Amino acid sequence: MTETKSLDQTILVQKYGGSSVASVDHIKRVAERVARCHREGHAVAVVVSAMGKTTDELVGLSKQITDLPTPREMDMLLHAGEIISSSLLSMAICELGVPSRSFTGLQAGMRTDDAHTRARIQEVQGGRILKALEAGQVAVIAGFQGVSPALEITTLGRGGSDTSAVALAVGLNADRCEILTDVDGIYTADPRLVSGAKKIEWCSYDEMLEMAVLGARVLHSRSVEIARKYKVPFMVGLSQQETPGTWVCTREFAQKEFGSMEQVVVRGVPHNDKVAKISFDRVPDQPGIAAKLFETIGALGVNIHFIVQAQSHEGTNDITFIISDEDVPRLRTVAEDLIQKVGGQEVVIDTEVATISVVGEGIAREPGVAAQVFKTLAEANINIDLISTSNLMITCVVALAQMEAGLQALHGAFFEEG
Image 1 (cartoon, helix red, strand yellow):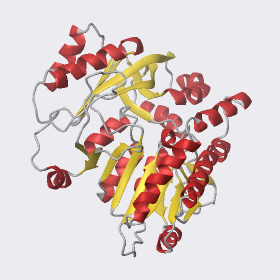
Image 2 (cartoon, one colour; image 1 turned 180 degrees about the vertical axis):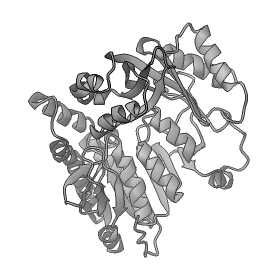
Image 3 (cartoon, helix red, strand yellow; image 1 turned 30 degrees about the vertical axis):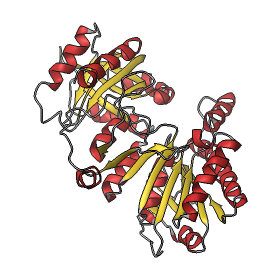
């Protein structure tokens, strides 16, 4: 990232999600908050998502044309949503007497690799944004997008505006970064499914990254990766009210901000109901088979969540892995050819599954956490299909129909019951 700060003012980067700019009235309310921050003396750079369900609507339009659009054309289509919201917000800010200018990702210097629909930001060339801030303007940047070395429009994947905001904060060497949305912070579980979910005051980058990867949809995982790499603390909170949110930061930052802290074993119980289980059954137990399998899958741009290989039996293995359900159509195009290529018996694709996880830095520290997870699910009569673990998480694959009950049971075991 290119650090370009030269202003005497504090630089504030704010990101507003799609629900925060879902209508003209919403946009006007956001404009009032941004204008107030500007008048308080901050140099304000704002990153916005597309309005409301615009991205879903654009995806729906594409599906009326084709089930498999080229990634380049999807980027050309989807990046338009953020441009609309950024220009409208800039107009609304100007109407309040505060000078403002909108920028596309390209104009804002968001340089990415060339991976269409899932690009990664390589650098933020923030000079143009800095000049706008130096001129006393609010800079409003279209999130979720950038430009490749070949000057192709790219997008960063769902939730990519979070990544745009954190990367911009790094590129501008901002003093503060706020991710503002329709929730007032990060919760121990999805409060729509778990009535006893509790707001978290702060969590570490590693904990938040695990929760984001495992299904907590408040933040884009890449945004947390960038924040962790450059040690950028950021706050997740409400866009429509200025209330305390959740800080994602180092333990040292949290200690300074919040004082003494208890040692938490489990930070949250995220879930993901947008996954599919793929099983390549009875493939030969030979060196190189897994490499051949996953090289082909990787070339499709399909991300693997985790992999489980069953113990060899009669010279064969079952290789099972979890992917996002949105990747299933791409995988289906090669599945039968691939099972033949590796000499396996059959491919089984199961979309009626979900993952439930427990995440926390105490999982490696405290004995008995895994036993508590498995006991709790067993007492709820929930069968575990697959298990994956690390120092920070335990993830169980369960039937989609049992996910909500399992989520509530685990949250009750680790939070409501102390």
